[in-house]
Amino acid sequence: MFKQMLANMASFGDSRRKTPNTKEEKIGILMGAIYFEENHRLSEAEEIYAEEYDEEYVPNYGDDFENWPAECKDYFRDELSEYFGCLDMDLSGDEYVTASKELLEEAWGIVDRESAIKIINWLIDSGHRNYFQFMIRAKKQWGSVTESNFSVFFESLNELFCDPIMLPENVLASAWFNEQDSESLEGYVDHLNRQIEFASENVNVDIFAWDAARAVQVVRLSFLSGYLIDEECWEIVRRNYKIHEQSFKNWFQFSESFLLGRLFWSCEEDEGLTQASERLLSHKLSPWKFCQK
Image (cartoon, rainbow, N blue to C red; front, side):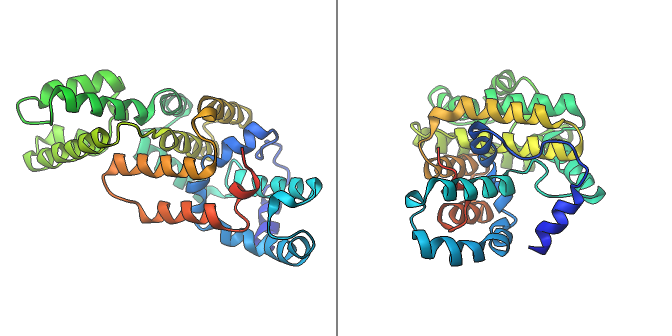
């Protein structure tokens, strides 16, 4: 409770709209909840809401949230969607602004509003969904990436992404090619071939959530960095949700799509994100439980 009081005090006098209002905004912002929970925010939610949940609601209405009276469901839905859906993630202070700016520049090449909008639009409209399909076609066309076809493959890849900053492993790839490091180039080619094999073995997989979740995270970090204002963030969150609304029926489906996308991109499982996803699917106070589609 003390942490929440401090967060409320820190935001006193801040007129920006940081919390979702509509269902589209509540579901839309929760599409980025895995990154939020990566820092174990459900544990903090327990400190704030568990006593009320365990001692007042469950004894009176039972464990099945769906059987609760409408006003009780609305209360917890609003509370948890606000807690997990705050645009600045309840982070205040110059150190967080600096950290978010550094993260955006290092991971995405984002340094201002223009570059933030560019990356967000790419994630929403194309993202690694197109890259995944490209790798399926690459398997049929080339079989694998080799020294003899690498240049042609990379030219095709550049045409797809239209900007080197959007290439997978873009920072490392750029360094590798600039330095003409043959050992690193060999490792990159191996990574590409692993991605090709994963895509060709999972042709029916839809990794939309990998793009959708990252779009929300980039929006939040861009807001925290001061690159985007509140209302344009919520407009982006709504647009992101509308584009992917028909792609998933429930949060389990969304989580599965996200983790498969992460596995495709990195070729290895991320234990932290996997565990965050599992907590969101099972925890009694998960916003995914209270904010269903």
